[in-house]
Amino acid sequence: MNLLLIAWKNLLQRRLASALTALSIGLGVMLMVLVLVISGAVETAFTQRSIGYDLIVGPKGSDLQLVLSAVYRIQPPIENLPAMYLDELQADRRVVTAVPLAFGDVTQEGGFPIVGTTTEYFENDYLPGQKFEFGKGGSRIDQLFEAIIGADVARQNGWTLGSTFPILHGGAEGSLHDEEFTVVAVLAPTGTANDRTVFLNLESFYAIDGHEKPVDEIEKRLRDFYAADQDRLDQALAELDDYRQQLRNEEANGVAAVSPRAMQEVTAVLVKTRPETPFDAISLSAELQKGFQAMAVNPIRPIQRLMTNVIGNVQKALVVMTGLIILVSGVSIFVSIYNSMSDRRREIAVMRSLGAGRHHVFGIILAESALLCTGGAAMGWLTGHGVAVLASPWLIRRTGLLISPWTVSPWELTLFPALAVLGILVGFLPAMTAYRTNVADALNQ
Image 1: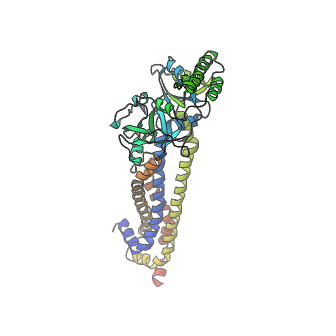
Image 2: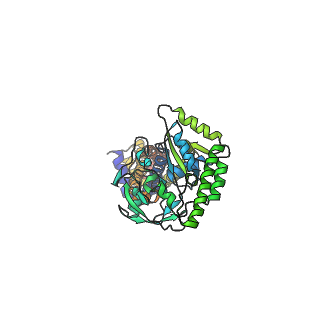
Image 3: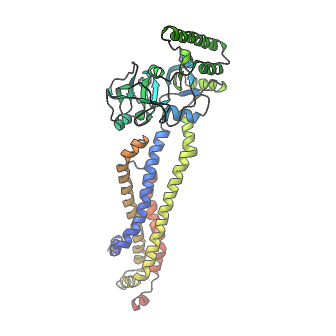
């Protein structure tokens, strides 16, 4: 009879003990599978080419914070840039596209980030070669108080075309703005932070009550920003003086003041340089790095640093921990089989007396151990992916990560061979005990 079949029948005779022993291995494998599925989703989100732009321009500060804010929308912005600086970037011969972003508010329902931008944002790729598609509505937000919403926003809040909503100033604990916005389009899913973002026309963002800072504060910021560019500073100060006069006229005569460009700010600028001259992005970044006004960041490098130094180490630690759980489960298999050997001495002696050789008995015990390990692993693998299937809709809603429950990690491909080897190793000593069993003594007992 086949050794594996004999080993299987022996395990069936000790169903409860065998099932509990295999369960310990299965739980460890299930945890490892879940860790690998979630880690794979995190790695995909953070190691893909972040956006379809070459540089992100923002105020001086942390390059990682700028990328996490502008691309992933999971960090508060550093500060703002004058909108006049956006005009300078757009006029730079090296720049093909400069798309502004303005942050600061969230939706009252769901706390989704509000981004003020232009229609040009949706005309460019959100990832290289990946263009925005619209499940409902058009692709433009030309009018004040119109909004384009991401797929997750629409699903979680139950919004569709024509839905109206208010927003909170300055975050979840902020005050409620009086203005209400109307959904004019819903983005198709992208698997990026765009899915959980609400987009407003940039002019709408400026028009919201409370978004305009006091003139004196703007003047101080402009003086600091353009300290080394007197011509720009003079232009900005002249606009502010005119605006002050308009405010006085508004107070005296009721004539509405028109906010000048000098009063407007943006949080970050997404820049695409000339594709035929790749050195443009490097030269622009180096030029800004020398100055004190702004910085230009390649979005890939800070994320690679984050993955290598933080997220990657956490992933490895979790895999090691689950590996140790599996190893401890292997020890339990060893203890279970070894302790059963004293009760099985007569059984082994009978097998030997019926013609089974020492190597056959040795092979049967190894086969039992390997079956327990690989059988538990198969059960844990299926359970782990099954739990991932059930939990993925909730995780996607909570994190925005694109989770593929049945994606097999390269680590998983090594699980079954490794566990088969583990089964052989933990079964070796009990198998040697069976190998050395004295037939006469065992039968006499």
